[in-house]
Amino acid sequence: MKINTTIKFTDFSNDLNDFWKLVTKKVWALHKNYDESQGSPVFTVEGKYTTRGWTEWTQGFQFGIPLLAFDATGDKELLALGKQGTMNKMTHHLSHFGVHDHGFNNVSTYGNLLRLANEERYKGSDFEKDYYKLALKMSGSVQAKRWTEIPDGGYLYSFNGPHSLFIDTVRTCRILLAAHKLEHRMLEEHDEEIDLLQRAITHGLTTAKYAVFYGEGRDSYDEWGRVAHESIFNLNDGAYRCPNSQQGFSGFTTWTRGLAWAMVGFPEFIEYLDFVGGYEKEREIFLKAARASCDFFIDNTSSDGIPYWDAGAPNLHKLGNYQEKEADPYNDYEPVDSSAAAIGAQGLLRLGQILKEEDPSAAKKYQQAGLTTLQTLLKDVYLAKNEGHQGILKHSVYHHPNGWDHIPEGRKVPADESSMWGDYHMVELCLYAQRLSEGKNYRFFDGIV
Image 1 (cartoon, rainbow, N blue to C red):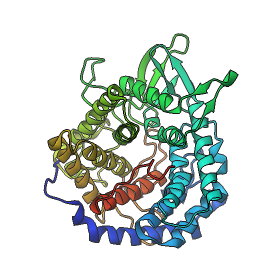
Image 2 (image 1 turned 180 degrees about the vertical axis):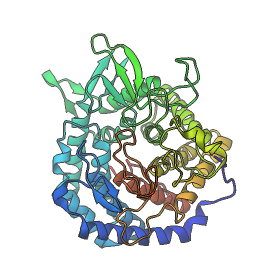
Image 3 (image 1 turned 180 degrees about the horizontal axis):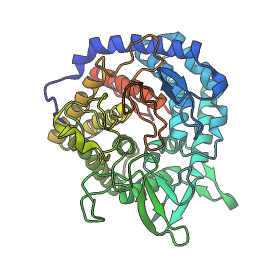
Image 4 (image 1 turned 135 degrees about the vertical axis):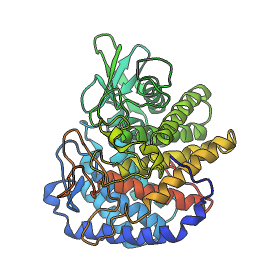
């Protein structure tokens, strides 16, 4: 990436005003035109949202988008839409024992509603707020129950089963932290009380140890900041066995959306540890993982801050020195993933805020890298300004190895399509940038009281 060192948060005011107008249009277009009988919207095909029966992890983004847009604009019709969707559609996600995605679905909805009510952005009754609190506590316990113990710690296992740790989950741990902030007591057999903060931290430490690489010679492809999508453990003795990937090219390459989950997940852990105090050793480990993953993103991303779907994708070499050129969503060899860019940019900005006092030079680097990516994502080539397109952020990729992503007629790789997670995280990124430009902050646990 070629980091723009001069751009400032305040430079985005006009672009963000236009962006919120676009988001508002897209929210209503989806609400009026999406066939809910399909199930949760996942990604677009020829600009129309459709579903994909794999796991139920995107509906919280659908209703979280209007809540964040209300936060940015004050448009109470967006608030009502997000609240109605949460109340009518999200209840079964609270007790969904089959996924590791509770932090995605339920912090994005119930968490945002509670935060906005407590910030007095709208008038929420005590009963309403207690309902949101109960939802977050329940969801946190359900996710925390997905637990595999290993000799040196443990982890919240993925939908693949107890042997599988996903890098994604480091970001969904926010649901355990939210439940902890609400002082929830999770009880196991014989009334054994589970400390949700400690369970989340233990998962984070296991992830940092096994899923993130630091150039220390673990394997032939060990490089500072490389991230494995999946880490496999032997359930007989808890031993780590190998890296793997579900949506990337291989276990020995870096799927860039998995990288992005690490980039934002570890800084959010640090934000919460700084809030509760203590945990200096754990904070140091999380900071190392955050810096490593963010550095890898910077070093392996196109000059304008947009990554291709996997840093080891087999045809990247045909693009030449792609790190020195702007990303080309319409190339013939490998797709870009704008959703990884939106998620990763937020991680870069959050890490920059964390390091402001302790390492100002590094903080500036990460902040400007995040702003460089944001500047690119706000350009017409990445925003779905066509009224017939139901998405917000174009050029998102879901599962390239499975061939799930739509390839436009006459092209060779996926392009032009949107995803619920890409749209949500683009909206969250822009809200975060807007708040920072106003001298404010936005953290998942703000207002969770």
